[in-house]
Image (cartoon, rainbow, N blue to C red; front, side, top):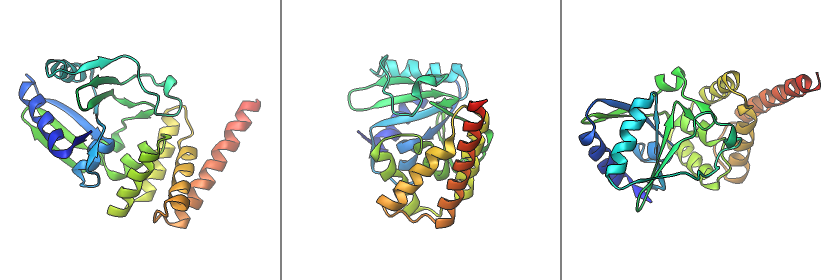
Length: 224
């Protein structure tokens, strides 16, 4: 596990070693620590937009004693269909997951980039923090209980703009292969019913209707 202070120390070390400016996006529990919505996380998730940047950070992590793990953990639905597999760098007490444009089945869209809430500079390393809405949406495609707890923490802390999450789930479906609103409905319904998350009923109803329509369309196409 890694806490916020240790995460920052790693960012400082990486930024100091980088020879050129590298920009990346922090997601998941790593982003939540910037929002003071989580005390620690098991892995640091970074998303890069080009191979040169991801390789530069990977090389520095190797210098810091991290080793690449080849057998990746299947934490996302339809993981095996991901075009860009993450690079998993294992350290003594933590790991870095490095993604290239695609977070398993999610695409790093311009809309997600535009919604970035914070930007922090550690010499040559620029860390951009994705919005709470996008953190919740990405977590909706997993099957881990801790991701539900993380989403609940964000819901309790922020005034979540639910339309952003719903619209991005539809957008991700248009540019990808998966019915993200279906994942999202299951995720939000369980959060509201099991964890008593403060999610408006009209949000649940809206995403349910979108999911039903998508499933009907999918089944129609499959028949033909």
